[in-house]
Length: 45
Image (cartoon, rainbow, N blue to C red):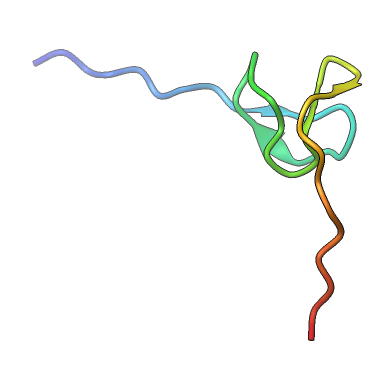
């Protein structure tokens, strides 16, 4: 039986959250020192 490799996880250089390599960070919206997705600040009620 072949084992399926697990995807590696890297650390976002902007916000230090874990993310998949070569992908936009879901936490801050940055990719390679450029904001790709505008994120808004969510406040807790």
